[in-house]
Length: 253
Image (tube, rainbow, N blue to C red; front, side, top):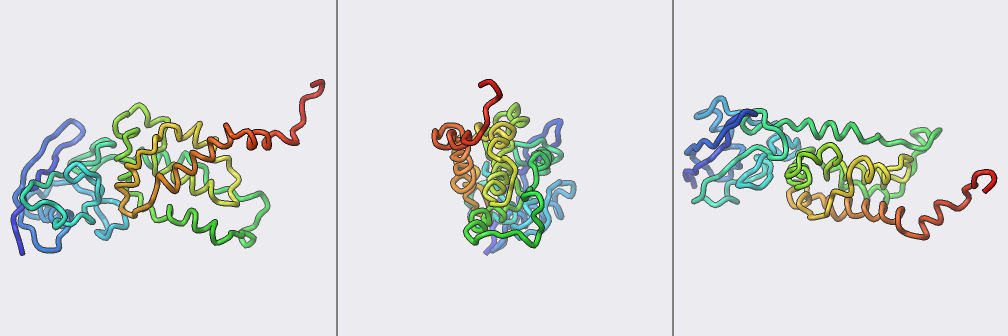
């Protein structure tokens, strides 16, 4: 079964732009990326779009479809109303390069700010030991395909450009949580999360979880547990007391 759909695609660059409408035939089983690539081949050869695997594993084809952050290759046309235009725009949280391609270098900069895994000094690779439950706690987070849909939909990043310097965003706070859960990591991730990477900016609206194509429970399994650890360290009286047991006072005190 085929039908004709109207595609409204944002065209432009950093200086500005607008929507261009296209009429295109839709075939059974197609995804939005199929149609975008056909537009590029037949009607708009200069249309800029980023894509790679077409299998939902590379995260390259992130865009907004009818106002919702999605992967072009994982959004089936059968899931969209056939009698309504399909509106496609670039990710709104990041600067436009051209058409549907945005500059996501913000995310690479945030990734570089996070200290890598640091095992105890003198511990050789063959001596690493972890329990299965320790592996399972963070294994979910490694499904991330770096599509940046969570970064794009987070209103702390999306609606407040001034926050970008102090806020890593859900994808990289999740990375911090993953490392903090590792029993052999020695870096003080909790202090860094709060004071360097802006954990306090997150108000757990779960919008990041809702758009994750890998169904990672970013909020419930990473951000909230990380927040709980930070709060416990700062406000739990038993944790506070335990952190001071055994400390020597300065001479004369």
